[in-house]
Image (cartoon, rainbow, N blue to C red; front, side, top):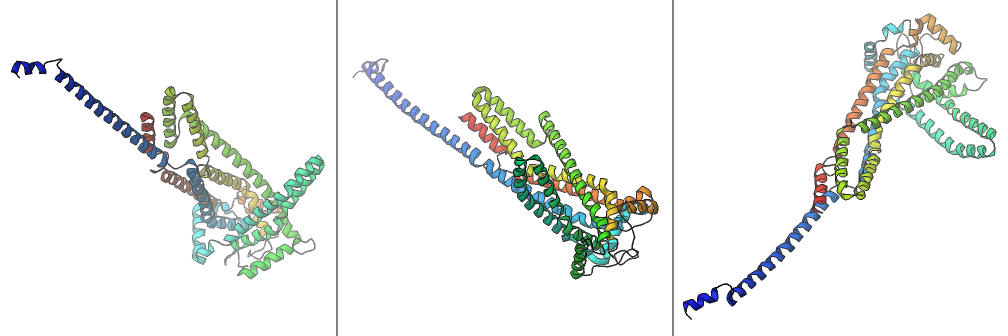
Length: 443
């Protein structure tokens, strides 16, 4: 074949060139199809990976809620135990100063004197002397709560049935239930009275030791229980302190509940207002950012995304109602309402404590108050006017300071626990949020 003929076969439109171009296009098409299939597999793998990170890396809402409830219960119990344990020596010292009559005690009972009193008690008897009758208060509270709970379960159906019959019968049944509820004070009053003796008694010029061992405590307890019988020699004197004590318990209980409810409602309303205006903590800011992102996505996703954002907000609200997030407001309101109630009832408590220790032998010089009003009158005229009803006020200031420190400690424990529960592995981490956004973009 000549050169011109060969070049003619290689020219455009010849059979060799046409066959070559067709084969190349077929190979390129096969390569493109293979690359397209590979890209699909890679995209699917990326979506699976991101879905696994955003779903399995974050625990379920139920697990988070259970974990927060358990943590909140532990923190609440720890705070109450710490408050009772750390404040008990201060309360015991205050009760001693309230029960012993002293002329112009207001000028003496400064916070510094309270510290010296506690240190002196510690040097005399060690750590045990700081906690006289520590378990008696817990026993009394347990008995009272158990009795009231059982009585409520028995009387509630009876009151409901009586109300269906007639209003008068329902009122009489409710009155009977209240009377039965007061009966628990009969065994509790001797318990608290002997616990007060344990706190007051010291080998000093103003008091003396009465209870040396558990046998003495049981003997005095039985003596006080028998004194409730009208024919007993000590009946009149016992009733002088018993009746005002029961009345004070009823009033302080109602007052405590009233103050607690108003404080908690005020706290809840302020918290709701703060959340609505945006002046909330970093966690709430993150929730607002997430909500804004969800709203921006809803512009292209329609009502389904709006429903999802509402469900997310409901879930967040449900999680914020766990014990972890509610225990501190409840503890704080409880401590504050207790302090306010104690301050209002302080003068009456002083009179009742003086009546409780009278004729017990714990006072070096026994008093002879004829009743509640007589004790009020003599305290006013013989001990320095209205200031005489606030003995141990300096130790009361120490008690308030200790309560404040416990609240601060519980707050930092709450914040530390909240931070610990939000480390990588929870649904609020930045990595999980990014993974979820990336998954939405890939899909």
